[in-house]
Image 1 (spheres, one colour):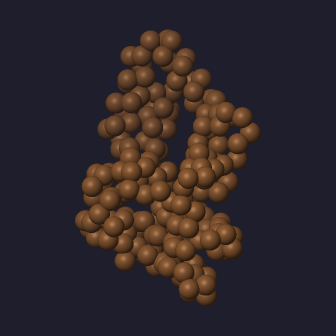
Image 2: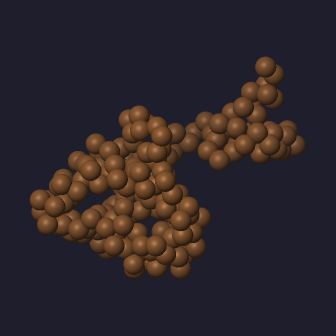
Length: 204
């Protein structure tokens, strides 16, 4: 396999990238000047050092010193009584752009495919349970499940409910879901601000 084929294969392994897009990316790299290629290589090589995972919500953020918490989790003006559980980092970005939510987040790290339940091993279910237990001692009042309105998202919702609902019920706290302002099959990452605001307002 040539270096070009290897590069195409690497791009194809990215989420949501098919063979055609992977080839376009690879050939675009070939047309970039040396300075841009060097910059790209440097960023890829150093990203693991400059970006870290928040120890609370598990989203990635740019670290400038020895911070262990991202700007959202460390902000004193956020509502610490609410926790929104989402699939991935980009869902947080979408919610923040909408400006409709001021609580905290937890990134689960994926979904539970309807036909492949063994993939639950890759998710942060244990970390979520521990986070909820800790936050219940510090004023947590509501956990909101914010997964895509599709079969995998709904299967993930049931899976997470089975883990944290007993904890919340024991403390008489709320477990809610984003309302159907989100149409069936939609993902948070691609929803517009008004849709997300309605989904939060109409959570159930």
